[in-house]
Image (cartoon, rainbow, N blue to C red; front, side, top):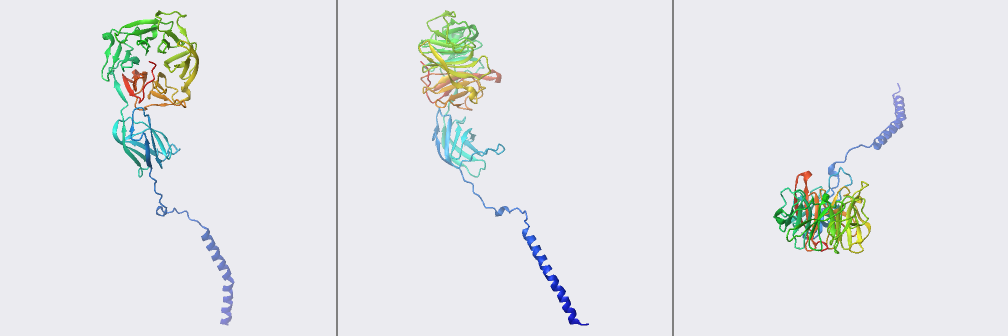
Length: 430
């Protein structure tokens, strides 16, 4: 056997398969190189992003929220704006001590919060993002008291009209016993004429006359009582109108503007008395179809809160210019509650500060509202501080104190009078 020839043939066979083997190996390498493995990158390989701590650079008011301050503005850097996703928890909380404040608005440099229901000489303001690793601190900060019970009306009496004179005496009526109370301190009151000074019917509203007498709208009896605050004498049914009125206010010229449900706005001169005929009881002609909830004369205008009797519209506030002491111009709209977030809240009173800012009381959870004199925007004032349900308010021009009747029988809440420091004098006519 030729061994040399056999090996040569075997080598030729091996050389013939060598290119095939090389091609197979190259194809395998390319397949392996093209495969990607879905392997999660280890957490310890990810770069660390440090949290940027918020900073407070200033607070307005800077060191103390005095009476009249309803919101507090915090300025700084790196505030975290809440996410638009409602499933994401609040990303920034603002604390006054341990009290969490109500945030009105927030961006990366400014936070506006409502004045908290807190009285303290020294508290710390803290802006804390959702991740509590980083927070901003400012202090000490002072919050003054702005509200107190007044007159000792805590015996669950149901109270009606309320007025205040320029010596800070308030006069309040009971709607059940019809007694008129006088109070000049935070703790007690007296009954006029030892309780004999009573109204002729259910008292709804009350106002001062330029003659220094108190006038009370007595509801269903159609009468308006005249009260001498010095002697306590009550002239029942000083005048009696063709229809029942509930609310009113005097202009400086001695005319009473008063109305109720579809009564129109009566214009009653103070020199009249007794039962008035339809010709004597002049009306404005502007509110014949309306239900009137509040009347206030201020700075040459008569302001009226009313609702149309033929629709389900919310309450609106109108005003009529005083052309003369007893003549009104056409009405113009001042506030349309339907365009606000308070459209369902019934109005119970109107008051003005000496600077001309309008305040509105309502029968709701947060009853005191303020109207921005520039934009007309309506917002809460002292939200969370003034107790629910207001049945009337008054404010003299000689002090910063606004007085409100607070009480709601449906909620079994004691009826009382609250004195609220507004930080500015009232805008009463006289």
